[in-house]
Amino acid sequence: MAESTTLDSLLEMGFDRNRAEKAVAHTGNQGIERAMDWLMEHENDPDINEPYVPPAGNTLGTTEEQSQSPTETPESTEVAEQMGDAKSPMTEEERMEQVKRLEELMKARQEERRERERKEEIEREKQRRKQGQELLQVKQKLQDDEMKKLADQRRKEKMEDKLAKQRVKEKIARDREERARKFGGGSASTGLSSPPSEAPLQSPPEDQGPPPAKKDYDDCRIQVRLLDGSTLSTVFKAHEPLAAVRVYIQMNGENGQDFNLITPYPRRVYTDLDMEKPLCELGLVPSAVLVVTKK
Image (cartoon, rainbow, N blue to C red; front, side, top):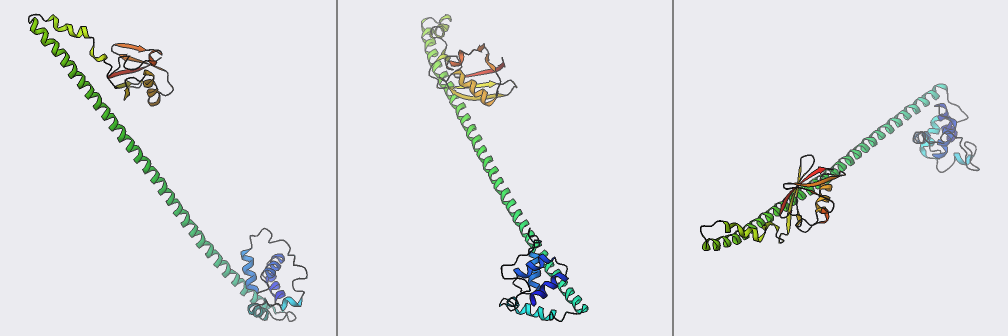
């Protein structure tokens, strides 16, 4: 009888019959409160409004075994006693009092559910913020690592450039010392043979040729003036072809543009054939200035 009483109470409270029957069946007829809890938890189920189909041999309110089932709890028995015997229907005043009590119970359950959902939403928001902060920290660390890497690379490039300049300076200094020794020896011998004459002093350089054309330079420092007025400077091997300088300019300054390379003084425009020649053969050792011009 408790099952029918619970079902009737749910119907009196305005629940749809399909929903009420499902609530009573799925809660094992454990009382009105359990049925209301089940309804609130499953109100968004897609099949909540479909008719309830009981298992074979089990019909709501039709078998005596259900009313005497071991699953019946003291709570459901108490509710059944409060609702009264089915053969003795409650008065209108009792029915209204029972409906009012159940409605208050339902409101309390709904309020508890809303409070629980609010706390869960707050917890989810905390988790989202925590994950966002962790993601920002990871991004910041990656940026810091990248900046540190770039700074280390720049320091390394500056150090290499400084060492290259130092090597060029030392090479020039050694070359000057060597020329001074050669020219100084020639001048001294000439001065002893004919002191009044100054013409023989000029003969040793003419006989020996220009000293800068020596082949013992290993490095060549090239400074390039680009079309926009900026400059590039780096060190190449003396036997590298001029094409290496052209590739360096294309990678670092004039991407996608066709250009010529010239030396301002003495003025010379380098052709495609010159690109295969080594820098020492083109007279660009130990250092030279190249200007980029449009074709």
